[in-house]
Image (cartoon, rainbow, N blue to C red; front, side, top):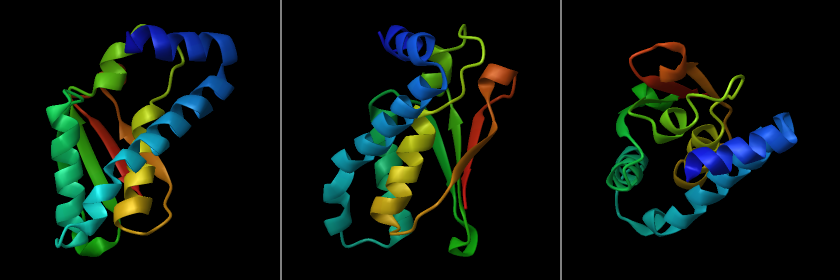
Length: 131
């Protein structure tokens, strides 16, 4: 289903479709707003969010936040990249939007999310860095 949805948006709107998918990811992070109320430090709140994503079957996550200077996330079995493996030129957008939204929501910082590694390119996992 997601392969079709992401593919239809990308095929129909090109880069505009990727922007829509990014916004869908960012807005999906809003569904985790209740995590803000937890009496946990920000790193633990992000880890709880990643556990929720893992329970949805969206991949397996490893969080890196050295000294809170940046947020790095490794994603094994990234659902978006698995679903779009056959789409030429597609760039991971949903997960970049999701991580951007989580950083804004739970860490209260604006950031730019970049994908450094991707299973679509033959890497063993996808890696995202927010700075």
